[in-house]
Length: 263
Image (cartoon, rainbow, N blue to C red; front, side):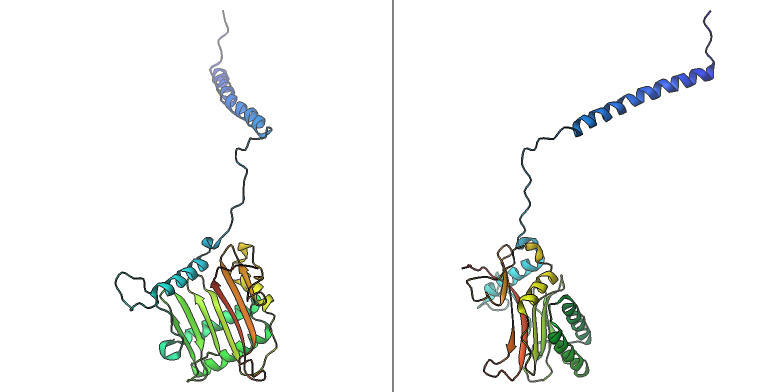
């Protein structure tokens, strides 16, 4: 007579059998994965790195829109039906607003530009002195164009048509596209090449990867150009009036959309 299996032993035996069956697919997958991983996979199309262009940068897209807006609005009445109208920012105090907060914002911007090397030590000092005077005179003005580029300028002399300090900022990215500083006295020549390289990095445009002096153009000595982005950075410093080297001096950087034919 066969020996009756203890109920507890029967349960354990059934559980062991079930566990063994459950482990079969796991074991199969482990062996299958090992075989697949040990064998090189065939690639139908080799990987190619995507090419970065101006379309990948919001700042450049906005500069293009601004250029197109200016061209489309040239000669049009302000509210002509069916036509695109671009409203530029005011450039003189009587077409701008005043605000203490903008003076503080501009001071932070100058500090950041100096820390990044976009402004060298001398011109950062000049800008700092202008900001101090402006804080006492409430001489900071601002205006925006219809695309959101904000111009912040300091006029220490009420009737002056040239600002002592000015930046144009793209409002969404908070990145400058124009920087201008004026000194009432002569200044040593700035290393514009180094300032432009620092500005490329500051504006997060170094990913374009092809910035170089545009040889064969008028900007070969004073600019950096990216053909991928279709953008040109230019700069300069020196006497405000070339015929008066002992008079006022300036420092300026500008970023624009430009298609250049290189020599």
